[in-house]
Image (cartoon, rainbow, N blue to C red):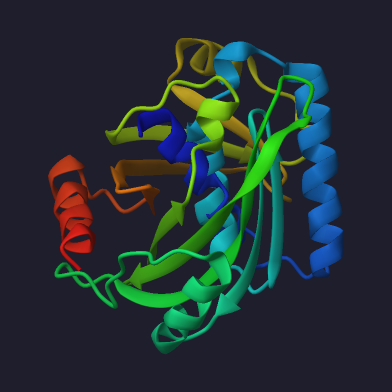
Length: 247
């Protein structure tokens, strides 16, 4: 899922990037919602309704010390509770979401399970209204030498509900995370217009990350794997995805 994948993982990305914040979870939730709302009103553009943005949020959010994340971007809204603290708890988490996710405790390249979360994800229209019923969402975070990788699975496709094209496979994009009210530079705007850069709002400082995403469908589940500044490449991520499919 080139588009949908990166977005699905944006929901994971915000947790990792916000681990240094000291605000309580409810305040963080409100900030993210308000920032997303402002972004939607001020920067609405159909070409920005991509899963790539959600994917990055996923990675940033997920490894954070906050126990709850609500991410609201154009096209998708996702809510995740980090309630899986050991690999042994996955069976109970699967009962909670209502589906069996193929998982591995560690990958052959050394990425090892750290924690996980459960929640739900909606597709949304251009006005930010939820479309239909939510899909169950399960998210797993892996680390290796300080690098973070997040895998998500959901029992439906909210991006298709939002009118986005779904594709499988690998993609890599440069993200710039900025605070609410941040004034884009002329260079930012030029790169964003060309598709070279994806802007996401909601952090307390300016940060840049290269997000690699690999997406696939297995049975009735939609999977996304997002790596934050890991420089893995398509071949390595395809291998990791295969390991999960063979689990």
